[in-house]
Image: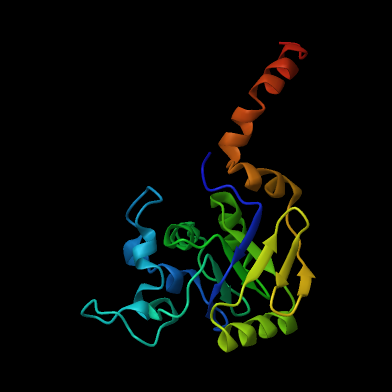
Length: 198
């Protein structure tokens, strides 16, 4: 298992209503030296989270104690910019298991799916309703239902469906990356190989 299994997530959320958040803002380039997926969460949104002296910026959402949870709600065009997979690693390592936005950059979306972060794309109208609900009550709960591909704002019952690649939808409840998936069907691969001519 490469990452936490994902099935149905009920959680409060952090609101980040900023459009065009790119991967250099998610994890600045100077922190890309490591090759393991560990420790990147410490530098998630580093330049937005901390002053030059390393002290936390009190007005940044990740430093605001009233917000908690495993869901990050971002503005339109989240994850644009370079293709660095470290951005998805940082999101996961911080503790987020889902990012909700009205639009994702394709490469960031795929990188998230590869490491166990579910990118949920919804309408701009529903996104704004979620932001409003969180600001009204920071403890408001959001349910992300992967099997039924539905996200629900539990305070109001409002919900929308979302799309996901069927292969990734099959992998996420098992915590499988591509290698785990192949290992899981190894016996089938061997049987298939036996039926093929050399």
